[in-house]
Length: 200
Image (cartoon, rainbow, N blue to C red; front, side, top):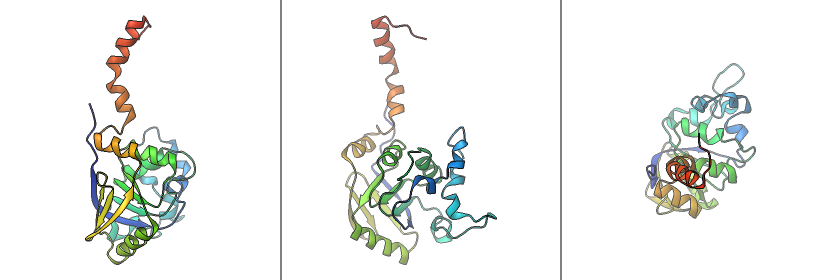
């Protein structure tokens, strides 16, 4: 059975400027020791958000005007670096549902898609315009429309790109391959039995 389709994400946006934001910045390595992903949100951007004494340093996601944001707007090559699936997991568990960037690292993009989190690429001029809007009007509500391949904010519409395979998976609710595998287990068992393979 397919998961709920992800046709669009509507939510307040937070601007996290900068290119090449890597997975070690998103979730530092010392937070990867957790047995489950449940508490990863606490480590999200930890070293950029907190000083040595635990005081907040003014990261965009901590500013009062950005509280409750569920969409990130950022630069190019987001999610580069080591291929830790903890990075999109930390973002998802912190309440983020979509990311708008100039481009994405390949593995990060795939890991985010399997969480039902659309990652859409926007041209630089449009990102510059959207970023200026968010600086002037923090917490602006945006719509990331997967079906139409566009982002809408404050009566402005921007075209975005998303890989066809990811778009189809999100729109059909087939974005979790583990779910797909588990759904097909009856057929796997039937085939194994027909071949005479031992099953436990």
